[in-house]
Length: 418
Image 1: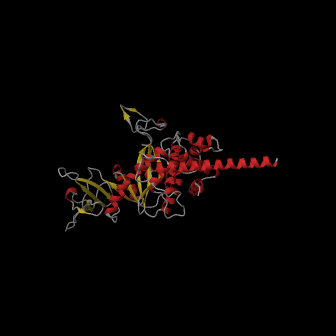
Image 2 (image 1 turned 45 degrees about the vertical axis):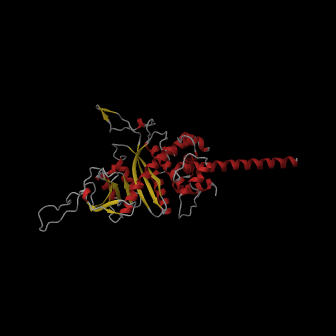
């Protein structure tokens, strides 16, 4: 099947969310994020799309278009969850700026968080801030993370701050396990997450405190019952060997003041050298029935979200927007997430009616692209995009050659007839 027909088949799942003109512009943005080799700004995508629409139609599609970016993210999650039966969520925050680069549009949004000598700086010092959700799909041989939902954050705003964006996302997705970094150790965050019905898996900070369940006194006493017992001593927990990489771990059902309900604490103990003391890796989850092996594996796979941020910034135009409004920026980065997920879905697509576009490995892709200095263990999103672009160009030039040959034949037949 031809590459463009497969792409349009996948993009066709989003057709009910747009009108005729909006769907044409949506396809132009998605294909522009995937195929355009230069900077993926609105101007660059317009010049590469060869669309009959005018330039300002692309700008108005982001600023005044009658479509909902959240609905696009919800439909993308439904599509992926119908393909992959086992999955968990990963939530994290990022900035849209790289070290040593200046970012366009920081002065459009007031940020009263930074104060220096009673003078408001009114800028995002590290670029615009975003909260993003990834869907970590688990297969028999590998784990694949799809970036599915992103929202722009404005510190200090009641409806657009970090907690409000997280609550909006969690209230519109199916219930599941949310993996968080240790920077989210906050009772307000955990309370919002648990009220939505989800389970959390988070790493504890170095100064985190956990408590055993309190022992009930033999005789009832006046006052409120105790919620926390004795403090947990991590070094004195009963460690045991498990079969996952030969790790020594300990687990217990404990309480913490960061979470309003009981959690399962898992501690991994390592000793790099005999002359040094033990090091402890501490994670906890509210899903008390989750096996210890899965807890450690899921949190180890959380790093896939960081690589997804890197790939979308480098290859899919996440930080190359040139628009000024909050709505336009949010829609632009959401479309870049959709393009990255569609690209990866074409390569990793088991148990679905959609046939994978390619079934090649890393060696075949690198050989086709004439890459001999880079030997990754698996296909990255950048290699996927480069390989798709190569197939598209080869298909495009073969079609042009076929049209040229047919025109020459028709011209020769007309000359003979004359």
